[in-house]
Length: 75
Image 1 (tube, rainbow, N blue to C red):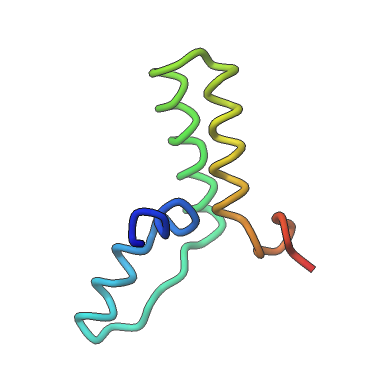
Image 2: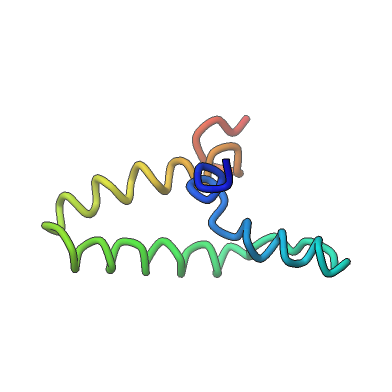
C-alpha cells in the first residue's frame, strides 16, 4: 500500500516520519513539486529514450497532481 501511495505522493515517507515524531505534516511547495518533476524527467531520460521518458513522466505527474489545482480531476 505504501508503494502505491508513493506514486501519487512522493513525500509520504517524510509525512509519516513527521507524524511519528509528533510534528505537523508539511505539504510540498509548488517549487518543490516542480523540482521533483524536473529531476524525475532527467533521471528517466538517462535510463531510456528521452521521448519514452516524457511519456512515463507524464503518467507519473498525472498521478502526483490528481486533485491539485489545475491537475487532473481538479474542479
